[in-house]
Length: 349
Image (cartoon, rainbow, N blue to C red):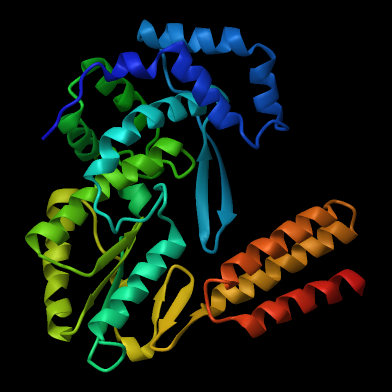
C-alpha cells in the first residue's frame, strides 16, 4: 500500500489556499458572506495560512437548514473560511484516494455521476438477462442514515493507513470532529455534515471499505454504488439472498453501519429496477413516478415565483432545460412534450 507524507505542507500553501478560494467562489459571488470575505481576501487567506501553520486553527460552528430533495435532509453549512479549507484539503487528498476506488462507485467523482451509474446498471441487467431471455434479479439496498452514522474513529483509522503525516492527521481530525450528529452525545462520535465538500470524499473513502469487501471477499461481479445506495445483479435469486447476512455482518462489525431494513428490495428485472430516480425495465427506461411529480411541482413553483415578481424568466427556462436533460436519459418523449406544454400554459394563464 502506497503511503503519503508531507501532505500538510501541500494543503496549507498560500497558492493552494488561493486556488481553493477560486474553486469555492465559483457561482457564489453574489452572496454576502462571500463578498465580506473577499473584501479583505489576501489578509483573510494569509491569516488562515498562519493559523494552520501554527496549528492554532479551529473549525468554526455550522449553521443548519433543511431541504427536500426529494426527502427532507438537514444541511450544515460551515463558514466561508472553513469551506475554503475544505476545498484545499479536497484538492490534495482526492488524487491520493481516487485511484483506490472501484470503477463502479459513481458518487461525487469526475466522469461518473447518476446517469452513468444508471447506464452501468442497465448494461448489467441486459447482460445477465441475455437481452431479457434469461432469469435476472437485482438486489437493491440502502445504508440507514449513512452520513449521520459515519464513525469518526473508523474514518480516521482508514485515512491514517495512507496518510503518514501527523500534522495532516491533526487537521483531518479537526475537520471531522467539528461536527457530531445531534442526539448522539453519549455515544461514540459519529456523523459527517452533508454540506461539506470534504464529506463527499470522506463518504467515498469510508464506503470504499465495503466496495472492496463486496468485490474481493464476496466476489460480486455486477455491483454498482452511488453514495449509500447500491444494487447487485445476478441470474440466481438465492445468491443475492445469501449475500444479505454477510453484508449486514460486515457493515455492523467493521463499519458500525447497518442496512435500512425497509429498503432491502429483491426484484425480477421484468418487474422494473428502481435506481436513482429511474426505473429500468427490459425494453425501456422511465422516470420514477415520485421524481416526475416533483419535477412538475418544482417547475410550477418557478413559474409562480416569476409571475409574482420574485423570480426571473431565465430561472424558469433554466429549470425547464435541466428537467428536459433529466428526461433525455429515459424513454420519455411524450413526457418531455407534456412538461414543455404545461410550462407554456402556466406562463400564459
